[in-house]
Length: 340
Picture 1 (cartoon, rainbow, N blue to C red):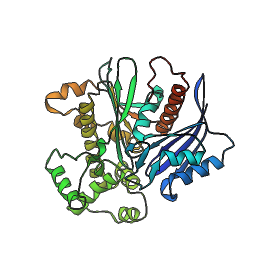
Picture 2 (cartoon, rainbow, N blue to C red):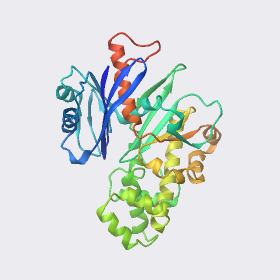
Picture 3 (cartoon, rainbow, N blue to C red):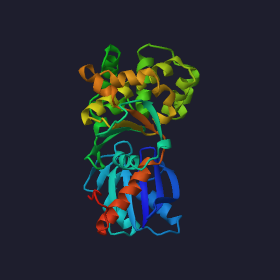
Picture 4 (tube, rainbow, N blue to C red):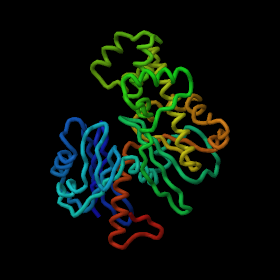
């Protein structure tokens, strides 16, 4: 079985060619593209396929946006994704389009222990639903429902839920962002742009002096990378403050999602930011914010939290989903396998 899988994000798009056999999925080719440098997803697909000598039988695209009837409009890129257009581009009868966090969730079920970094211990026999949230270009959230036999991933758009401040400083942050954005979601504070938003708030409200070097770098480069690096090196007071607030908010929203999904089986942090700031996420700041939920704090204490280190998790998940659905269509689904 020959599969084309894609992880389509606001910053990068990864395409991978997999082969499925009785031994499982094997990655044969992988390429990463800068999303903003291309007019649409079809252009990237054509470029990737033309560079390969292999044929494609099945395809699945995990995209950073809500998916309805095989269609999606990516909020952080503006691309319109349509499974029928992609099928015509590939010359296939059909392809599957799913949310990128749903693809991550499918990939999560295929990871090895070495692909994870434990942030917080939980109950030794932790089991039940799981939650996944990924801060990157945007903030994605998904769940994995435990049916007693296997995990069944599902997408959400929880990252666009209302940002809920917990203290006076965060109330000021909310009011600051309200002047710029009609709706202040958690994505406005928990994403690459979110870290920059927090930094701008601290700077503009006189909570520190912006260093000329940082100001110049921000004019030219990736704000999230610049600010996180400056904070980790502890060379810029404003960046250190911004990252501290970011980590605290990350813990708070991870705890919120754990409660919403009753994710007693564990919470996982995906996306490109978490592995880069792992040293800060392992601090008490994240864990305290995760657990501090009033009367249900004792429940949060039992839930383990890990960072996903494998950057190709969504790609692996998209390939796994394509293979699973192909087997379903052929009537070869394994016992208990979920066909949709």
